[in-house]
Amino acid sequence: MTHVLPVSSVDEGHQQALFPIREVSRLTGVNPVTLRAWERRYGLIVPTRTESGHRLYSAADIETVRSIMSWIDRGVAVGKVGKILAGTRDIDGSMRGLHSVIDSAEQEAWQAQLRQAVNDFDERLLDQLYGQIFSTYPLPVVFEDVVMPVWREFTLRHDTFGQTSEWLFLDSFLRARTLQRVQLTRSSAQQRVLLAAMPDGCRELELWVAGLLMTTPELAVSVLAPGQPLEELSLVCGKMKPDALVLFSTQVSANDAPKRLIRLGLGLECPLLVAGEMADVIQDSLAGSAIGCLGSDGLIMQRRLQQFLAGRMDT
Image 1: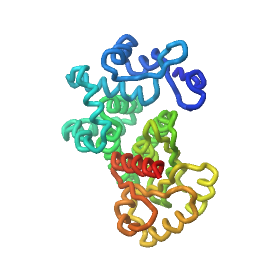
Image 2: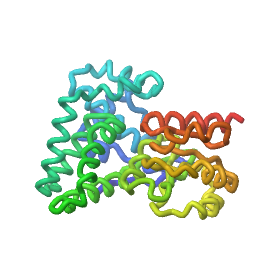
Image 3: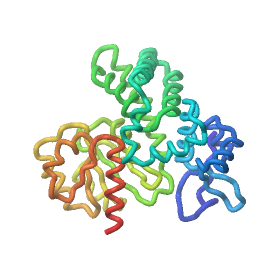
Image 4: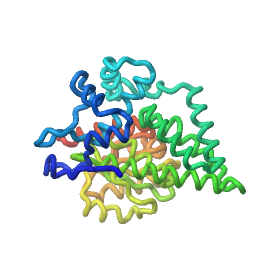
């Protein structure tokens, strides 16, 4: 059982899930002595402290621990890991480098194992592979270079007899794991964005993955269920009061999409942004409007969203 301490034990003004060191050790396989050493000697992790001095770790800290482990497993000295992690956090300087951590041979090997697990309906193996991939590569690489390409392969032929069940097996597995991860990342974020799908714009898993890729420790993404009517978004935003609304679609939109979006934006009290392949297609049509385009690459979406919100706070 995962032990999560209530936020009130640390800071009444911030709402986040925090984990004691013994739970972080159980989740990552790194013993508490090593975790303390990484903090004291190298400053790789900076956990929150209670009034009594006990360490508490956030979901982001746990991901950092896993990233440290992956670099050490590759033969990188622990003293050099901090510099690497600092570089990968600088999206402008590391976007190409981040995706280069996996070569084509590794990518194909992982994908072949995932396909076999799905073909065999082996949930235990699929779960094991999923965990191994996440402990080895950064989150954008996991989804964009390994997991989602396999999911799309099964999606393309999911209407074929004998393969419908395989697609449902993989899709339900990934939706459950992605939802769990999105919920885990909702911490003490000071800003919140609502993410909704354009009508028939994407499948549920694609929407959840987009939300996960946009999320940062400072920004929580609340994903609205697929099928959310566009005409009711002004009502939803009026009550939830997000810092921005993002509409996502992997489909090439109809010719009237820019007009519909501009009309929708006029009725919102918060800024409107678009993301996914749709954003790349209609970006020129939205030039001069107040609607921002985030693009379709995970890292680019996250970077542009951060820049947009930071610019808005400065005004």
